[in-house]
Picture 1 (cartoon, rainbow, N blue to C red):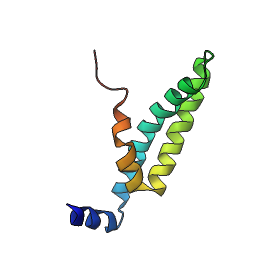
Picture 2: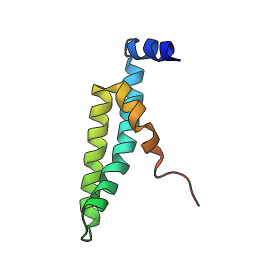
Picture 3: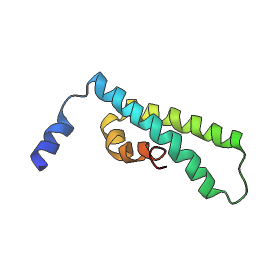
Picture 4: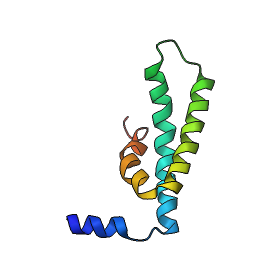
Length: 87
């Protein structure tokens, strides 16, 4: 297992890896930054402020996915599914 991880980590990064990581970062940033903003501020937050935080999170997620594709893909992958599912 350790050897396979080491091979995967040292493999050259392809454009498809960067695209997938940017997609993961965009979805995760869209959810994480506005939720974090709601938890950090005790006062009511306007919808436009949350929209600005969501757009900023999306852009930061895309940038981090392009710059650090493996790290972004591994760390943020679970967070991209926050808004999906449920009844």
